[in-house]
Image (cartoon, rainbow, N blue to C red; front, side, top):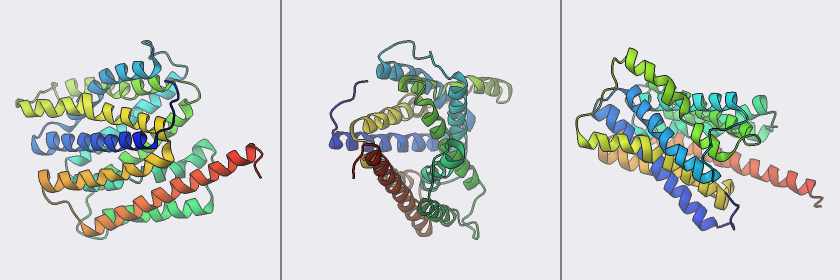
Amino acid sequence: MATPTQNAGLGMTFMLTATVFWSGLDISAKYLIDVKGLPDVMVVWFRLAGGLVASYFVGALIDRRWDVWRVNRPFLQFLRSAAMTATTLCNFISLGYLPVTTTISIFFCAPLILAALSQPLLGEHVGRVRWAAILVGFSGVLVVMQPWGDAFSPWMLLSFCSAVFFALMQLTTRMLAAHDSAGSAVFYTTSVGAVLLIPYLLLVEGTVGVPGHWLSWVALALVGMIFGTGGHMFNVLALHYAGPVRVAPLFYLAIVWSIAAQATLFGGGINLLGMLGTAIIVSSGLFVLWRETRLQKKVEASSNGAP
């Protein structure tokens, strides 16, 4: 995929589209699990198996080759895909018990977890200012969860695990960047779960059950083929045209779509203290992004001999 002329407006449009797709993924999954009562693991499998099919063509389009399965680091690809399976499982199961607004608010701490893990796992330096911002962000998670009151649910811990596994997936993505192509990474993202969950469905669930209503089939198609893969594709395009500094802050607009969906489709789920916690998490995440970008520019300026 050739590097195009930078186009901030186009990149930001792609990122906004990605947030709509990702929110649609969570909303469709909650509808299937919470409203239609489909087994959560079955919905996860449809998401991963459908994503595997769609991701093959997206990966081939990105790399402009059909053999996107050829990689140099297969074990690391396996770990990355396993993390994707784990984050999807944790997220979809928690969606069956929590409002969409709560799960997305907790998930917003994933960039903070990524920043915290980058020092011990990648050897990247994280200074005191960023550590302070990370700790402030985690305090926002506590405000969202409210473990001291009746609003707390143990399923919130599972939602937090989803953010942890997503951060680990992002870490392995960084590790793979120097060894395997972006198209291969896209293709392998859902491969492990799509294959390994089949025995669970057949042996534990007993059968790969299917919904009886056409609207549920539409929601499954959206979960499996459209929203997840489309969101990932638009995210890649956004970074391709505008870079992370311009488009990453728009990721947090997903809370807007989640609030609208929760209020209109599922009812309730809007908590003022939870929204305060979300604001703390988002502010901390944006500060960490700004700080990392600023330090990176200083390093690049020094390497180029700038005064």
